[in-house]
Image 1: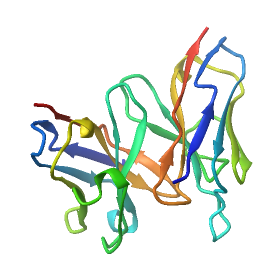
Image 2: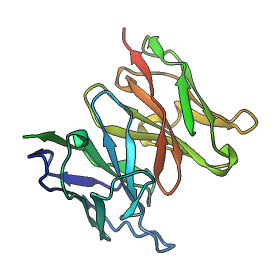
Image 3: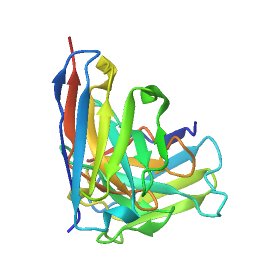
Length: 112
Length: 116
């Protein structure tokens, strides 16, 4: 099974400052068709998850442009250019390239 | 507006069964793979099962193979998860998820508690 390792596992950020979360895969996430199926999910406390980014770097509709995704093959990053109060919660990467689909452990972000 | 509404959760004893349902609206259901994911109390997210658009292919995480069955009714825009031989470690909030290049829409979840 593909293992996704996120770092850091917790992040305390001052409002307006940037944040970055890494997601490393135990194997290549390039699908035989050429796409790379890694997504980023945000879950606020007590709420359902919401997807922010798919296929490495494509923002979902309505997601602020302060969120960006990058990376390739086994190393991926979610960046928030300027953290806002509503960004608190847990961020997960998930891969859909290989079954079983797998999630990272999650990174908890709070405001310093 | 896309909506996914889960139901069917509850408190059961180990070894018992539950059937979860997910009623969807606001999109063309037959065009999408559908997934069940879960989150144990205080823990992270775990993918459980996925079905293709016509239900002909189904995929499961190893820990539920042989015990859980995912199915769908395209006429009713619904997806189901039959859970048999439930274990304490199956206790979680179960989410219904639409797949579009990954898990793009999530329901609010239904809680399953397995306890003696």
